[in-house]
Image (cartoon, rainbow, N blue to C red):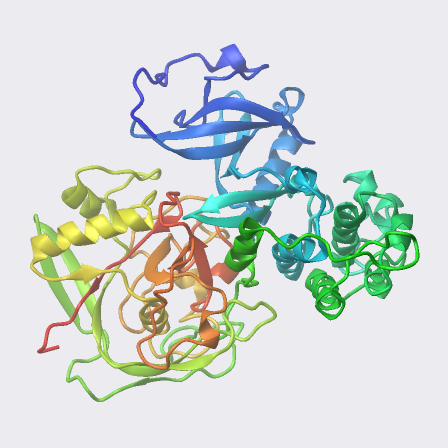
Length: 582
């Protein structure tokens, strides 16, 4: 990515492309997206490959979804785009294409900006050569996990097909993404039917019977489509009758997933894929009958690249957790989880929440003392990435910045301000994990003390501040999130602090942590001072954001991004490494 000259000015005429979009045109509130290539059209509008440009620097390739020219003046269509963005952006899963931001353009209305998968689609992968059962299970397993994850949030995809399954490279690891939730709909109970629940939208060849006839649709509707994809990969045919060509070991598994009645199918998409994989390990024969009566010899082994894909994406990732809490002096949360005791160790004479100020370049950095202690980390829930709840001991206390790093702090150290929502007291955003490392290094030199990002355990311990329950107090009194933020960041310190005097631990912007992200890390993490240092494509962020749902503000909720991700919902706060007297 390079430096860009001759950017258009804000006075340039947007009307020149009100009807037709062209390569080289700039879209967005501040014209940050240069259109590179038309990738096609969807049900709501055009899809473009674009380059994101900030401060005249090319940041990354993104995909931009626009509103169709004939619908740009349709308020209903634009509101649908906004609703879709809010719904899908909340699906934080490593195998769901990330939605970065929504922009408003005078010509196009809302633009949905999302990740770009540079590795092609599963349709391209399938065309390369015949596929073995092992290969098919490897590539569909992460997609099944992503679908099950969406179903737990009450969302069905309703257009599962190879073209909506993509590969991308993240830090050298091949990762699968499920894309295009453009026709996704909220699930409701059978007695609370919605139009989306009965929609026929989708691709007919992969549709479940209930989708074709506009009957009640559930997660099993997506499972049927996933089974059709598996059938196509294994037999080369999209006819359900081709299941009769499968070997005796595989046939009943696929037939079950393709059952006319949703209740007769597997409980989850992952259960279907696991059943297929188990049959493959028990019977190492090819999936297809060669002569209509007996299985053929074993199919080709998985290629090294696909083996790598499985290694990088196999953990199922999830999203919620289990404790959190409300301090005794605050209004208790309405949704209180199981008891989660946080016990301070008597190793330090300092009181929890004690304040000290360090100064650099005339800017004050106020820190709060977080003493050594023991607490229950994580959250038991229907989602998985925060499980299991486990006891963690932090053997050393630490000083944590009282607020998120502000734009004034960033400007004084780095000499620029990358933030979208400007304000000296607003949290700095559009900073990557790597950017935070540069800031910490420079500020450490100015302060003469080492500052760094907190670990996940340190962050969650500080957020809870010895409380029990779902949050560290009343959420609306403590957090800026999608229900009260007006979709913008706010000056730090306006909401109530937690019991240790820390502001905005819930909401405003996500806060980067030092750890690598692994959805299964808790099952093997050490009991004392845990920090995941095993390399993965992602780093962890915590705390929720102004444009995310309340569930993201749970103390145990884990978010992730690549180390070079920059978005308006990513910020951070600092930890000062304690001195010997601390």
